[in-house]
Image: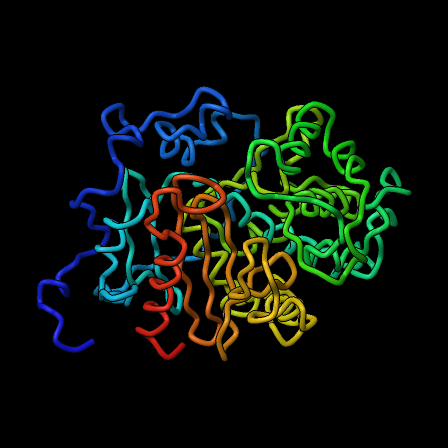
Length: 413
């Protein structure tokens, strides 16, 4: 991208002087207020404030930080990130003016090489991860497998959770729950009356077990087809707790969060009926600790010189060659009819010749990982809606272009 104007090269660390999209709509003049309850939290005026304070709105359990936080240094000089999107060439500063991102942090070899924040957000705030939490649950499952708490991923959920015996999810193999391949008839399109809304309503009033038992019909045999649904992660959370004898806060905190060298406390939102951590999307942490999590993944499971999760299990989660053909990029069909992503074990797999993968959550949350280049990008956001980009600004597509630009800065896609 030679010949770019010199002014494009002048961006400094964490700059945010230019206006971010929709600041007034999102509550700028009121100081980005926090919703008084979960229903209000998802209204546009409260999104920014609520997504960085969700555990002050709803009950939550807390994971303590590590006693020896992993250092996360800033590079002596910032790397200028450039990317191409459609017919234009842009920088990270441009991106922050185009899209409703709250934070973007780029790390390589353990150093922050670029970071930006919008809407007055800071690195100290705990950000809601939404469905990024699914991959964290999968890491907990893999750790339980390593320690013999779970005997095999081919076991069925009811082998650990007898309360689900005879139910659809109870009779489903753990590996197929992790692959979003239970075969259950289930629509998660974020409309007001979809199966996700119905499942969530039962979970809030009667608890996770009753919600899991409410899914009774298969659309096709388990293991055959990808069908994304958070209900499957809810079951995985229950299985993990039954197998380990600890709740998610305890197990993930001890086996994942502290070993990655987390510097700040994290939290899981709790379902009101049974006080179960919301496995499918209730995790909150700082962007720097999300960066530490991404660094562990980029380093094939190693953090601070210690193996947190085995490399083999991470490959099982994220290597396209280890997934059945129907779950690989280019052949897997998602709910929107796209074949762009593949899906491993609660982990999105990127297309391309190299192994790259992502933790993704609705409204713009993501951690992108490139193990070969030891490269991570953390992204939090407040997209206009859960299912897509109602503004027409192509949030997900431009975020993908930004990640491709980050990768291209250090190598080739």
